[in-house]
Image (cartoon, rainbow, N blue to C red; front, side, top):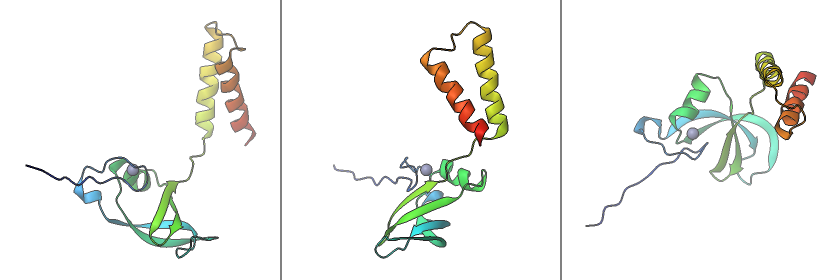
Length: 125
Ligand SMILES: [Zn+2]
């Protein structure tokens, strides 16, 4: 006996969509291309029908993330804006950095240098 099962994947992150109610959702997206030939345009709002996992739906509904889209003829790519690191996140990284040094970590080892670079980068902004 041959059984065929259909699997659905989130159009945003590509993970399995395991619950039916997240399939075929109509969601407003910010498009960065016109949708016939996919040429870059000024961003505009457009409704899209996508399969979306619980995590990505939560990112929109709970975290207030904006869904971005680009593509042509219904073949679209979706993504969320990269999250900006908050002041409290930077403070937290500084706290970890300071704590590592206090407990004897060498500030010249590669990952400490990198951590310091990240902290400095976000403090500039
Ligand atoms: Zn997803």
